[in-house]
Amino acid sequence: MLNKLLFKTVNAHPEKTAIIYDNRRINYHELYSQVIRFSKALNLLNVKQGDCVAILLPNCPEFIISFYAITQLKAIALPLNPTFKESEISLYINDTSTNVIIADLAKSEVCRQIISQIDRKVELIVVDGVTPFSLSFNALIQKETDELEERPSYEGYALYQYSSGTTEKPKRVCRTQKNIFHQINNTVSTLNITASDTILCIVPMFYAYGFEECLLATTSTGATLVILEQFIQDGVPVAMPFVFRCPRVINLIENEKITILPGVSYFYSILAATPYQTPADFSSLRLCISAGNFLSKDIFDKFLKRFGIPIRQIYGCKEAGTVAINLSELTNLPYDSIGWPMNNVEIKIIDDEGNELPSGVIGELVIKSESLITEHNNPPEENKELFNNGYFLTGDFGKKDEQNRLYLTGRKKILFDTSEHKVNPI
Image 1: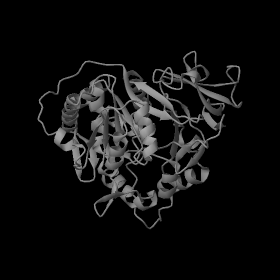
Image 2: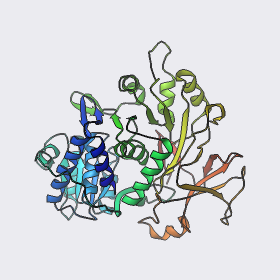
Image 3: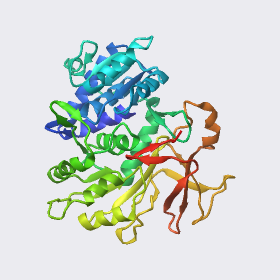
Image 4: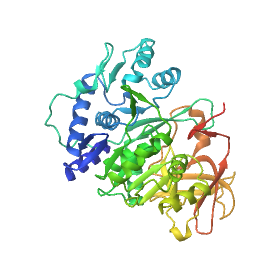
């Protein structure tokens, strides 16, 4: 289903720019051609339906090419945070029986060490260089292909993600192509994303938020995705705090005429603190969305005053994707609301007995949508507690106001936020 959707986009907008990354500009025809080439290369490495391929990359065009090449083969993509420690990466690689890892040079040695401890064949593909123990991404996609025809539709498993939730062991979430297809439809129709939009990607695509609101939202509509490139120092990628990337973000918003900016509250606080004497033309922006952490009134007010654009809170989970957004009129826009359910999504507030609660009363948020998975792959014993009669019990507490807007008030079990990551104290 996903590659059928991408093919439709390529057919409608072959020469339109799909991805901008530093000085690289890739149009949709070029993107699809590289997807086909890489999928053929993976197939020659014996990747087949149901196999898992790990994507251990920062935001870059190769992330997108890899994802669609994997789904072309009806295999399953496993996006991983490249800042993970070796033990964390090893846990996920082994839990999913991954047989190919796609990484950059910065992570190649760690991957080599992990592979050396696995008693099955695992291939390593490096996207930005060559090592004696890996295959070169660029070499694998060199072979020309004329095969750009539409592939048969497929609804099966496509994506592994892990939800730390409130258990000590992360829960494996496996979303199908059908789940993701409906997620795309819900998001695109609710936010009215079209080929005329340009989305700036400053949030990680290995997280559900960046994956959906950046990667999927653009490639399914013909919109353009501008990716904030890595900061390179002495030829080596360096992780830089957002405050030092802020001037570059402002430059991209102005020069590329960004229309949609998915971010987090911390990023917006840095942007809002930009001195007034610093030129910052945000007139092209029509939508600024925030996820991951509560948005404070102070950040909301300062950003609105500085740029004249409201930040709209968005809400979702790995099990269902994005499910709600605050699209209230500016004259009646509560900063702390996550708004209403997206198109084709049902959200209720229930008590401990499963009864729906009236407005103003706090209870647990439960979600129902075609984008929702039906169970966790592991641990299976928790599925009865979390999935009930087509609904997913989120573990989030919230309430509705008189206009049926949703508000989050807390968690059933405690997580804490650090550097915009949700962390389980256990």
